[in-house]
Every structure is written in C-alpha cells, then in structure tokens.
Length: 92
Image (cartoon, rainbow, N blue to C red; front, side, top):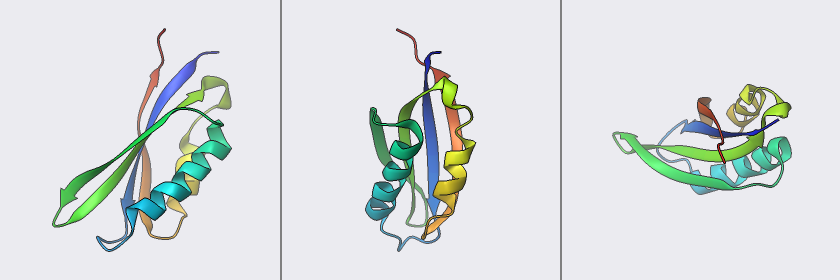
C-alpha cells in the first residue's frame, strides 16, 4: 500500500477556545491513529474572530478511512466539528 496525505479541519465551539491546546490533543489522536509521521498545522480565519485549525498528516492507506479519527477529534472538549476535507495519494 501507499501513503495518503490527509487534511482534517477542526472548528472550535467559540472564538475563546485555545486552538493550541486543541492542536496538541488532536496531534495525539493523529499519532495514535496513523503513527509517528510528518504533520503540518495552520490556523485559518473563518469569520467574526472565529478561527479554524487545519492539520495535514500522512497515513498508510491500509489503515482505512480517516473518518474514525475525525469522529474522535470531534468528541474532544472545545471542538464543534472535525471534518476530513482532503485525502490524496502521496507520489514519490
């Protein structure tokens, strides 16, 4: 199997949520699901002071759908929603 590059978009419940704390917890869930690997995260403005957290990570395709991971992240405190927004095969 090959690797997949996955993007998960995390929306907090309010602008007051500490996205750095959410990021740390989400990265722990990602490492549990996909193992140690490269990750990249960025905070993206949405509207009216609300920001979203976008995390890109690499996983082996044999692990199956990353939707299970999104469900675990969505269940975390301070998270309104977590959605897999992109899955691509890694080339090279």
